[in-house]
Length: 108
Image 1 (spheres, one colour):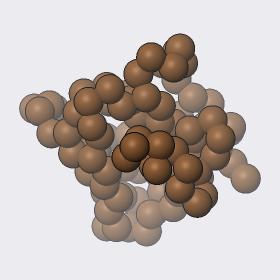
Image 2 (cartoon, one colour):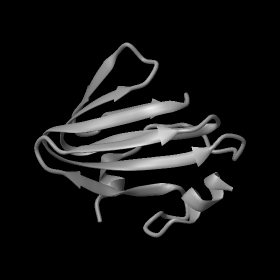
Image 3 (cartoon, rainbow, N blue to C red):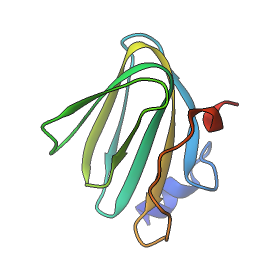
Image 4 (tube, rainbow, N blue to C red):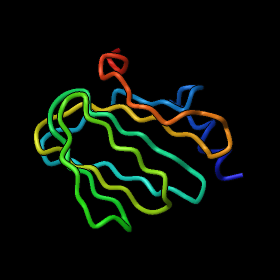
């Protein structure tokens, strides 16, 4: 039921995509993925730092870079420079293929 509520929340696109989302310098965004959820975050502009629970690596993303998260846990993103990014979220078993996203696709 929680997954359905997340899927139907205001502002979410029907395809599980969101964005672009904007962060000012130093601002953060976070989410908690539950088992079976997947997330692809694509930096459209600026620079982002991403860390995720259970992954010893940190990621620095520039325009066009994508990080895919398919394990449960907390994800935190911080803007190293003012940035825009897009998200694609989907539950497992929906047949959606994981792929890199074109940053131009998340411009309004």
